[in-house]
Image 1 (tube, rainbow, N blue to C red):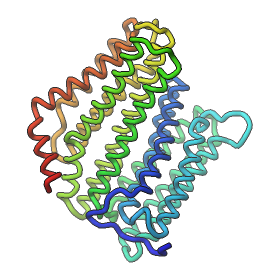
Image 2 (cartoon, rainbow, N blue to C red):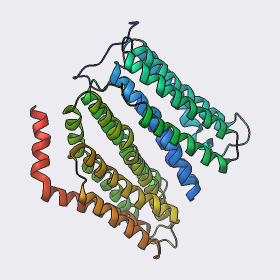
Image 3 (tube, one colour):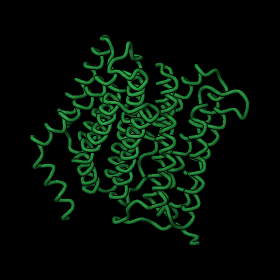
Image 4 (spheres, helix red, strand yellow):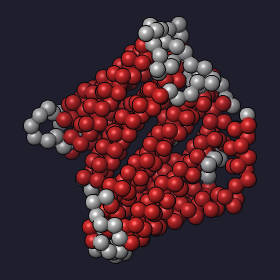
Length: 401
């Protein structure tokens, strides 16, 4: 096995080892989705959001590392194996991160310990991979200071009451995100813009796949009938719509924008667009997956079109997750092209209003799923009419180039 890190270049793309790493990340975000579903309350939702923020920053850290050196060659290959094992432990303990089950090891402590090893080992490997780059090593040392503080706060939170733990871990997330953004930005490099764009595009696919799995999970234990068939097809249509609203133009514009800048400007754009703005987009999809699972599960339980009451937090996950996703896409466009996507902001506002209104009406799970799905279909139709030629030329232009 080679004993040195192999640097990446402009033509570098995602490796199969990184795809394997992402499969473990799939399990982690699925565990987050299930933890929210199992504790349908605003507190459970807040806990899920904090957990999602933690595991996203961990995954993003290795996306940056894979852009610095080939993930499937040299010492980094062993580091990726190690990180996958650590991430699997994190995923196994997500359901105990806030509510430790009796017996066995203390779940919150195991969760934090595995997460700390992943994050700190990443910075050590990054420092080694930055051989000869003093600026990068200096930035990594600054990131190590911020990450260490966040890890200490996480460990402190693991030993307090679950209610207090939510507050303490929220502080840890803020320390991590704000600290890296403010104090450890200069010095990083994005040697392979295509790799970075592709890596984050694939994680979007992973999150959308979670919504499809949620649809199947909700209806798999019930006898199929017309309502469930309609609900399942609506769920799949929503997944397709989510794919199109991102990959039809936004993904192409993001990669092109990253290629058009260099140096620290490229680093800042990659930081903003991928590490920070993709996080709420992925989180929005995960929340929609929770809403789909519960809504279709209620329809499956009753075997009819209506249900007496849908928990308010489920309305928040479905409509709020959809709105968060669209607002994130608009912010992505704003950061890359200099102006937000007004249609996406308008549709996000409509979803918030519709969800608020329907939460006071006699609840119909399939009506809610249909409302969100048809709203996205309407947005796609508008995009096709208003911007179809422009986005098509953009995609084909990149293929020809």
